[in-house]
Length: 140
Image (cartoon, rainbow, N blue to C red):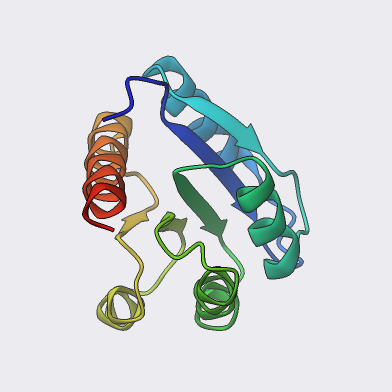
């Protein structure tokens, strides 16, 4: 591992105007010692990936409550690949039907945190995702 802080981008994609959960996750990860960048509301997948690449983040966390996760998250994954940044880990959370979790993981989402998830679990998983990224980078 590089020894630096884990850099996480927390993003709200689409027209979803509720960001309390995203802010709770951002604060929780910052309290766990990570450097967190919050995009604010109503971002496009293109903007999220652009910020992630420019800011050299290790992880993108996407918060969704609008039911648009099967549209926006695959687009973020596709754009990461297109920008040769698919080593950036992606997790998502919010109101996501349990039956969609398997499909999200198949396309490359590292984990899905449903409403009410424990922040210690989120932070621990973020550390694992970071470690996976470091191993991948060293293998290349």
